[in-house]
Image (cartoon, rainbow, N blue to C red; front, side):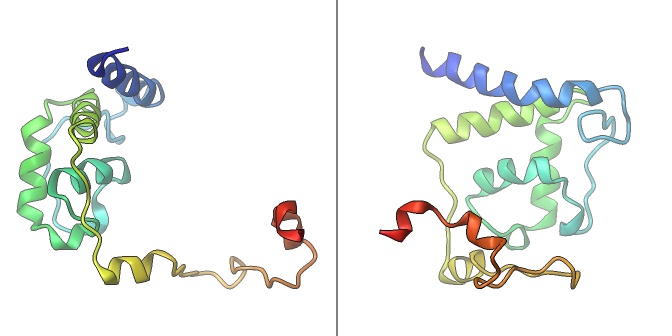
Amino acid sequence: MNLEEMINQEVENKMAFYKKDIDNPYSVNGFAGTWAITDYRRIPEVLIGYLQLKFGQLRMRRIPIEDINEALNELWEGPGSLEHIFRAQSELNASGKDVKFTASDMASIGVKKFDDEDVSPKKSTDPDSMSQVPLSNWG
């Protein structure tokens, strides 16, 4: 299997999930407008991987919002354009493009924030969480 076939297969696998939303104007793949994002928190999650590779940055806030809109609008042609984004992302991956990690990125990767009190990590002494420990850790 050559590189182009691998990229096509990867894009087809991703699109199998998103094709069902092509007629829904409220979904990313059904979006028929021009990207004019004004807040980093409003960037659809499905687009973040492409943007990280395109700009080589892990954190979106390090990329000017105007550049993000420009990059998305270059590829976006209306409903169904998510395939163009996935193809560009796969090509960036195949070309060896990578994302820069800084020391602060590495420090924050392991930190989890919990908004709700009922969604907190279990203590290691909790017998229910012991089932998640691999048996190989017991010697």
